[in-house]
Length: 400
Ligand code: PLP
Image (cartoon, rainbow, N blue to C red; front, side, top):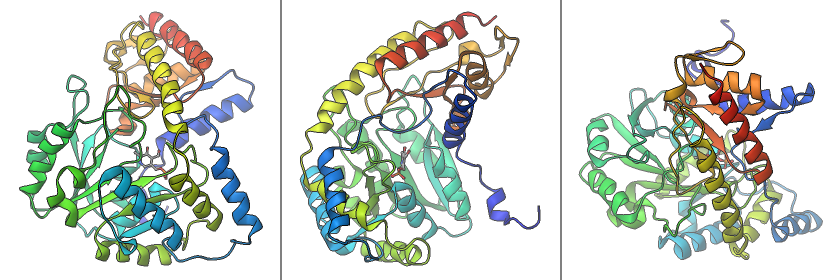
């Protein structure tokens, strides 16, 4: 199709969005579908944040704003980084966009030249590689293993870096594995980065607050202040603040990079929604006590799902310490045939047959560059999770 740009042929539609859409379609046809594919909390946005948005509307805060964020929000972000991460930034070092996705997109598109490599630990979030490819760069996946809890080893990072490496793209707690790092584990990685002064660090801290078992959160520039001048620390409100639909993400880093990102945004979306920005000021400055309350529920659900999946024949499900995903291996199911006769050769075959035969929607590991496995989002009720895991057990038990 000559009319469509070549650059679009380099990328895939988001597999997580595709799976969620398929689940919605089947449900609309009357099928009993449990969707564990979406990466969003089932909790409501806290009331104080909704109220701030209503106030913004009533006060007429309905016009264009500064492209990369109102001063009040930049101040709240500066305060957040200082309070929670021990990082000092000026407002001119902060960029606000329409979701963390846009902020990542801005950073990569504003910096990549043809041939530039981006080192990405895998399994990884579906969009990283595609955004890099759109920007003309080359994603370089570094595999992690289930036995290492999907954590990147410093030797593997060292081996992946070449003279062409522009960015190291890091995400912990991780989507899709939930892997989280201790300070010492992170320091071992930043030590490698200190030895490679041409590599910039893009850290996606989206799941910062979704951390369990008493684990404390650290971000690269905090653990290694020597990286501050070449680190972009990205975060957002979608996950911990239950604001996926509001679309707000932000990052802080060196001023020249922030300016370049703003230039790109000024020619695409301009400012994120003015209403959302005022809600975000309240989210960051207001009470944070709903976060541990939500996390207690997530831990209960995680424990339930891990325990039930490990009772399914052929599955092996590690216990993650962050985010709201589990990432079981389905290696033991490959080469088998389902109750309705589907051949399970890949993890994609596995999730398609599971959806067809049991009405449970998950996302296959290939979409996250980590096969054979699949991702379950446990951000839904205990009842639905129990029913879904029971169906998965039945599906696996019937494989021959
Ligand atoms: N980064 C990671 C690791 C994610 O899982 C997501 C959302 O799924 C994002 C970034 C983007 O989030 P948003 O654009 O909703 O802020």
